[in-house]
Length: 53
Image 1 (cartoon, rainbow, N blue to C red):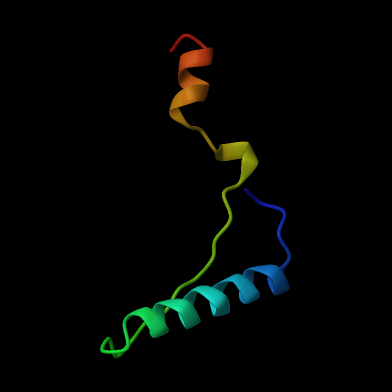
Image 2: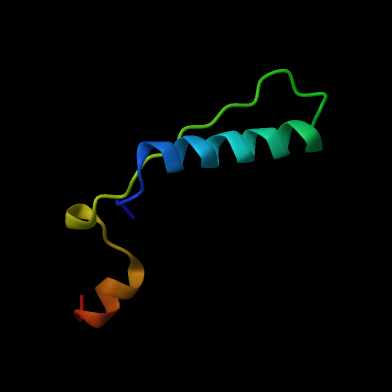
């Protein structure tokens, strides 16, 4: 969900890419981007069931 700072998301990306690079050294390109779920537009299965949809 939304609410993390840019610095927090950047650190998460760095940690995950570092670990994946260690786990899979033969892969030439490993990259990621962290994106937020906007609370206003987010929906999951449990929300549908609780509203009787």
